[in-house]
Amino acid sequence: MALILIADKISDEGLRLLKTEHQVKIATGLSESELVAQMSGVVGLIVRSQTEVTRTIIEAGESLQVIARAGVGIDNVDVEAATEHGIVVVNSPFANTISTAEHAFALLLASARNVALAHQSLQSGEWERSKYAGVEISEKTLGIVGLGRIGAEVAARAIAFGMRVIAYDPFVSKDRALELRVELCSLHELFERSDFVTLHTALHEETKHIINSDTLKHAKPGLRIVNAARGALIDEKALIEALDSNILAHAALDVFSEEPAIDNPLSIHPKTTVTPHLAASTDEAQVRAAVSVAKQVISILDGAVPEFPVNIETVDPDTMTKLSPYLAVCRAAGNIATQLALGPESDGNIEKAHITYKGNFNNLETHPLRSSAIIGMLGPVTSAQVNIVNASAVADATGLVVHEIKSEPVEPYENLVEITLFTDKTTETISVTNAGIGLEIVSIGDWNIDFRPVGSVLLFVENLDQPGEVGRVGQIMGELGVNISSMSVAPGHSHDSKALMVIGVDRPLTSDEITEVALVEGISRVRQVTL
Image (cartoon, rainbow, N blue to C red):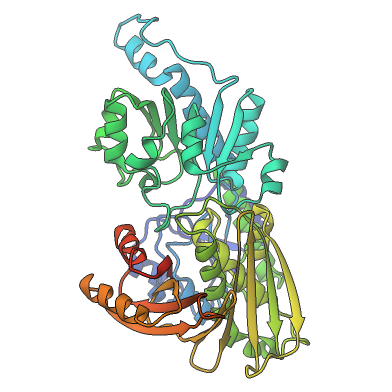
């Protein structure tokens, strides 16, 4: 029997499963040094969100084989250190799906019928029936921002209540939306048409403050907004102004930009219903999380593959050695293709992707490359954690169809990977390779470019193929205080056709700065990509 250490409280159901197979030691609320002292002989470590599993703790666990996080994220686990030491990391990513969806819908209903305010009034000795009259949700339109697994569950509940459901999610295909009986639309259209809006998208650089003063200008009169996802999705200052000026009728919030939100004005605003980050806090969610990780720990210690591994490589070492130089370039190519296809000016939706391997890939299992490309395409903008093990499942969940094609080498490259991303509005193709020094962009669309990026921000500038364009762009970069770290130019195919400049710069440009560059004589389009 192996020794399993429980460092955070988990449900009894999970404990019972573990105790049938292994020896269990419970030691919760420990500091790092105290936990290090407990690691001798420990084969499995189970935590929730309270315990930080640091490199020091991992290195103290000489017998450690598995770290299990009984919850959705793994932010409190040093996965890199675990991987270096051959320790499997697992979590329970779907444990709180129903709980979060139900809580969001509870907030929606509470907002519609002024439940919290009426409750507070009555408990204060008042009987104000007319003051707290509400609105029905039947025949109303619900707008969902983020149609992942939680958003889909909310949609199902809304439809059952007789609501029309529309959604904004550029990473969900029209077929997937049709299956869910949901209509896709742009973010501004969603706000213009919706009586209620609920947020269920991941938080990252592109979605931070996705709900801001500009978004709220498009709000339909009487709109009520619900957020049980991430607090920073909303610009809270803009939200308060919209509530105070009656642009919004009400806001129901479970999450805030900073927590605990005791001093947040939204917590006491007369037009809000608030809860202290309770969406995942149900007995059932905690049981599901504990049972899921208990089963996975038992499975790993029995030598089987767990259900939700975070850091397992699934091809033989020789194959991985051959593929490893192309993992990062496939991820970068997917990332670039997505950002080019779904830039700020686009309201398209991803439909499918083709990955073509040109070179010595014919006899290799290439799904790690496929997973890396999917991570690049979906990882930064989906609510699910995307890694090399679960990338295919996440793609399936979002309706992204990925085709792999293998073909002969293309001179002068030994190996080349081409990714074509199709949306309902456009198609973007990028070819990349690794010539021994990292990512090399070989082509963008019809342009042959041969570009090795330096830095993490790239500008793709389309311009007339005429003298002086490079100089004009260089001059305006200098005026903006932007350093150019690398540049390559792909000429047009005829005298009056467009050329392409790809420029590595030392910082992202603001939207105003991009507009300023686009106004330079001869330039027709400027797009920015962050690697």
